[in-house]
Image 1 (cartoon, rainbow, N blue to C red):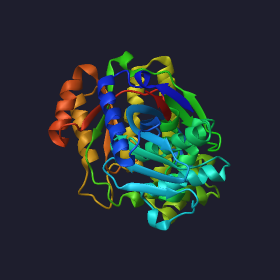
Image 2 (tube, helix red, strand yellow):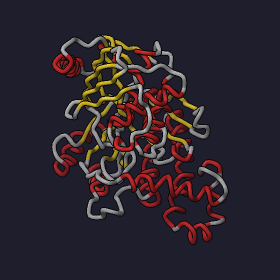
Image 3 (spheres, rainbow, N blue to C red):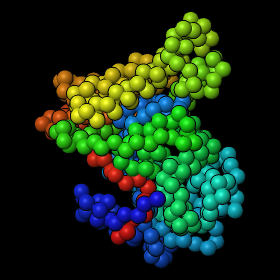
Image 4 (tube, rainbow, N blue to C red):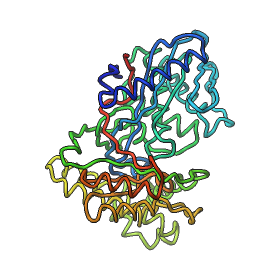
Length: 411
């Protein structure tokens, strides 16, 4: 678990982040009547490719980004965690009670309690602290604000009570447990892993206890392109059933063959039994399973493209991934709210503005939220203007890759 100097972590925009941390410190002093002892940060993440494959033990490529959630913290001796996120009520968790509280489902308290519970189950130490947090990771953006929050809490517990000895990978797995069991969202492991580990990484989840993580040396600036995330400001209310249906349907296909996840079977298995699967599970489940297998292959193709320096092939693979998510995975709009199709509109606009260059695809879980675009720098200004003319000022975010995950920050 890393410790990094403030000036190194935020070298791209020191003035902005100095203001953020100054305000954070002032808020802590206002709420707790003392100065914080330590500061922490955990990054948002962008999924580069591998859309909805992690929960079925697939392959992904993801990267930490230069948007983060930060915390000012002081250790306490009473076993009580009191955390105030900017714009939200206080969260209070007594670490002497780490049972599941059903009334906390889908609320931040459950994530804190779940992190502590899993720490304790694995034999790690937990304890109290006071904290205030601030985030510029867009909520509901596909940049995984919830994973960043979980990793932040895990990073704080790691440094305050475990001498920073717990690995980034272990923190990510604990965070997934918290989100699945306590928060009630059946997420995969990609979000937490990218936020915790940092950098540009390829992850193979065939063995989720020992995921294979490969750091990828990739600098998009070398190819004169920018990474953009477009926030369509979609409504995320009641979308958990839409998200949950994807892993559920994929696993149902695996269960047809007596297996738990799709990684344990092959595309040929599915095609060979497609007629029976259609009758039992419906066409969408079959299509989503086929997307899974092809997306795994695209992760390998993208890796080869990066390593060989073939950026045109990189862009083409991103386009193929987006096309598959749109047509086969079908997570670009919610079937429960067909009148809301902001992602589809954003993809249409992006394709027109790029005019055959760059690439755009649905980003993250889908259904609402964001798309991702790789934009030639010569078109960046007109692209941003065109997108924001429809989705509003500030809806097109130009991001950089962050090479540090969850970390203690030395001011």
